[in-house]
Every structure is written in C-alpha cells, then in structure tokens.
Length: 112
Image (tube, rainbow, N blue to C red):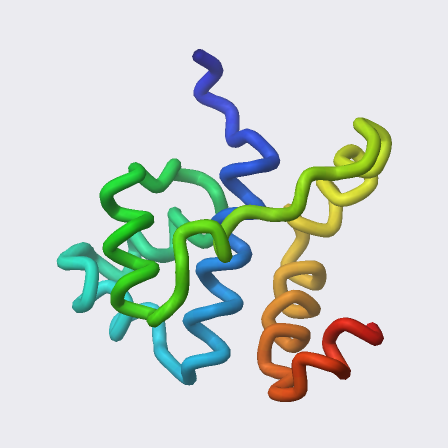
C-alpha cells in the first residue's frame, strides 16, 4: 500500500477537524479524549496519518456523532473526486470546511 496520503484520509481528517471546531474544542482537548498527543490529532486532521477504525469510533463517541459523519458522500464521478482533492489538501479549503461546519442552521448549510 502506498505511503502517500489518500484523498479519503484527507477528507476524513478534514471532517474530524470540522466537528472538533464546531464543538469549540482545541486539538489538545480532542487529543485528551483520544489518549494521544495533539500532534497526532494534527496528523489525523491533515491526513498525514490514517485514523484506525477503533480510533475513528472513539472520536465519534467523544464528539457525539456517528463514524459515518466523518466520511464524504460518494462522488458522482471520478472527476468530482479529483476536483475536491485540491480543496481538501489546502489550508484554505480546510478553513472553509471548518467555517461551514460551524453554521448552526442545517437548512442554511444545505442551501449553501
């Protein structure tokens, strides 16, 4: 298996970061909940390190969501996935996703 980060790992990390941010948690708070260092949380959130299934479950339980919430919806086309990759791997894209997750009104999020 490639040691290079896969776009799904990056998308999962981005969603972990967005959920954490929406809760108002720092990386240190999530790290304490998971029993890891804040540096490890950074690596999960950027997709540098893959999150194991058990750790993903632990994160979901700690943050009050389901494991499925961390996975992106299946792209309609492979081209759509390629379009999303640069967004998911940029600091600006992660910031946008975190800001989006902080919108409290689900209807407003759907409209966007």
